[in-house]
Amino acid sequence: MIPLLCIAVALLGALAGRAAHRLSGGALTRPADPAPVDGHVQSAPVTTPPRAAASTGPAGPAITAAVGAVASTAVVLRFGASADLPAWLWFVLLGLLLGVVDVREHRLPNRVLLPGTALAVLLLTGAASVSDRWDDLGRGLLAGLTCFGLLLVMALISPSGLGMGDVKLVALTGLYLGWLGWSSVVTALFLGFLAQGLLGLWLLAARRAQLSTDLPFGPALLVGALASALLGGPWAVSPW
Image 1: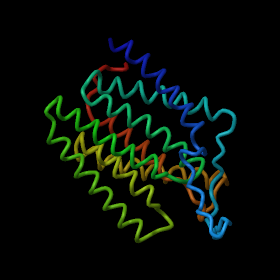
Image 2 (image 1 turned 135 degrees about the horizontal axis):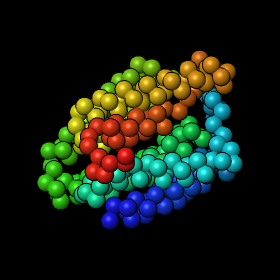
Image 3 (image 1 turned 30 degrees about the vertical axis):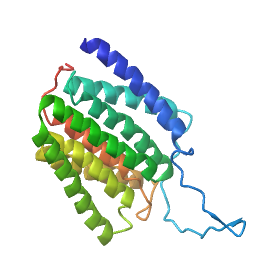
Image 4 (image 1 turned 180 degrees about the vertical axis):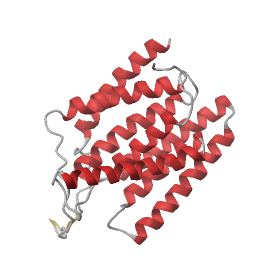
């Protein structure tokens, strides 16, 4: 059963990756147009810091498809045919879209993030009801709120370093990692900040960014969360 499940979710992940690439920059993710005033659209000039080049090029859909297939398969191997597998597959699918949008647009749109988080809560609640893991659900909700509060304070202290999208995203990752345990939450945050730091150093060394360059933080948070989930416990099916 597990091999067939891996094949099915790998195909689903690949399709989701390509779909995420197509949807980014479209009506689903871009900000709403400003309301017209006296028949004219008023827009204020916006000054933004320089950004690293984020073009995914013609290989973009293939890359996101490969990431989706690998991540989905890894989640199946980690959690098996368990009650919480649908929630983790949703995390991969949602993370694909958010990650691609953040790379290409340097935004984490509320119209994707907030409903996606609400559905994640419902899926984990369903898993808790099936497997009687209400303590895990409570810890996940508390971890999500704690991570939200922590990054909110950091964003208020250094608005140029973190955006509110990052603050809301870490509530989602905290929810999932809290479901697994507090150590997974700490590991995910550490890996996320580490990945962001290493990416910044590499871009500086390659002269593709400057110290003032604005780098998207969402992908690093998502990678750190997924890595923590995969490394934070025994795999249902050993990949080796």
